Length: 64
Image 1 (cartoon, rainbow, N blue to C red):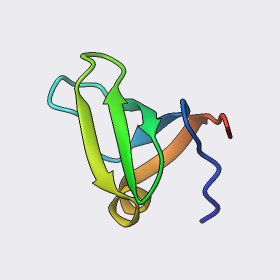
Image 2: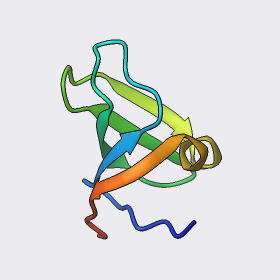
Image 3: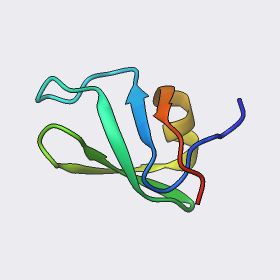
Image 4: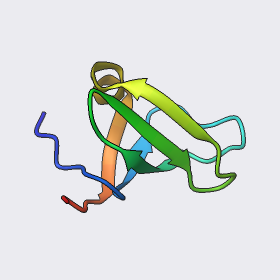
């Protein structure tokens, strides 16, 4: 899979957040990826390998 996401990209995950939203904004890119829920604003930190497994679709790509 080609990683066409970057900082401030909006991604759709396979599982929904407990608040019911499945859209997240990427706030940090590196070895770990930090995503923020677009509904409630909570942040989650995932290793890049796990993030690549759990991502479903890139909604808005912004490669910075």
